[in-house]
Amino acid sequence: MKPYLFLLITAVIFSGNILVGKAINELPPYTIAFFRVFIACIVVLPLGWKEVKQHRQTFRKEWKAVLALGLTGVAFFNSFIYASLQFTSSTNVAIMEASIPVFTILFSMLFLRESLGRVQWIGVILSLCGAVWVITEGSWELIRTLGFNSGDIIMLAAVATWVAYSILVKFHMMKFPVYGSLLVMLGIANVVLLPIALLEWVLGGFPDIFQPGHMAGLLYLGIFPSLLALILWNKGVEEIGPSQASVFLNLLPVFVIIGSLLFLGEKITIVQVLGAVIVISGVFLTTKAD
Image (tube, rainbow, N blue to C red; front, top):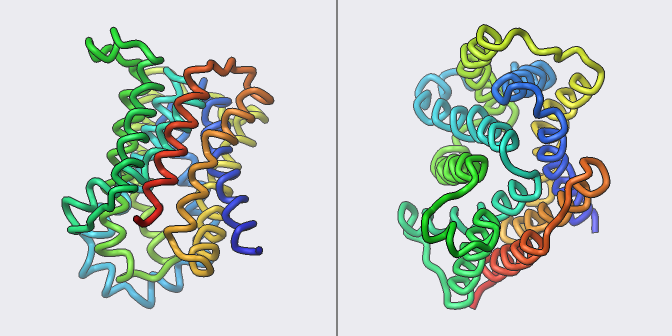
């Protein structure tokens, strides 16, 4: 029962990442991304510094791998999410994020030579159709002209970035200690995101991050999705395995739809609900064996 509770809490925290990102989206997206990784880096420093020193030769030898992991999974994935939230709803972002496992499987077939059964293929097709249905708002005219919302296009970039990160994890993550690798990746993200955030500040002025609501949101993003959710996710996966654990990501749209209604005052359309059902059903089938 405990691992399932851990994974349920993880899904709630990941949903909160989207909701909080939407709630403070008057802040520039790369400013949000920078302060998120900056706070997370400070928090994980006591846990990770010793591991970094003990395995410094490994990090030097595998610098290309850890750099790629830091850029994809830590620096730009969430940056794209926060940028997309400037233009599209948190519900759309959640539904598209829930389709990530399907895209990961497709690219794993290409790069890792993994195969799919018939039931899994049905799941892939359902999830892809559901994602297209959501981002086009069910409009065949938009599908025909490819006139998608700009925020949805940015979110597709986030999905692609996470897929690349997931494949890199399968190839390289076992080489590094858990907290040490997290600290190094967060450090890389800080270095990469700072100049982009500085550009936002030069063009638009330094944002009011010390406003209580903004500060509370940044602290949440830096501590809960970046660190606590990772720890709970790892514990859950150790107990029940990655396949069963991944099913809990399908709860993202459900929690975000509920949160959007309760806290952001967003209107939920029947198109979004239908898309959520299709994506969740497809991803569930994709995680099942024939």
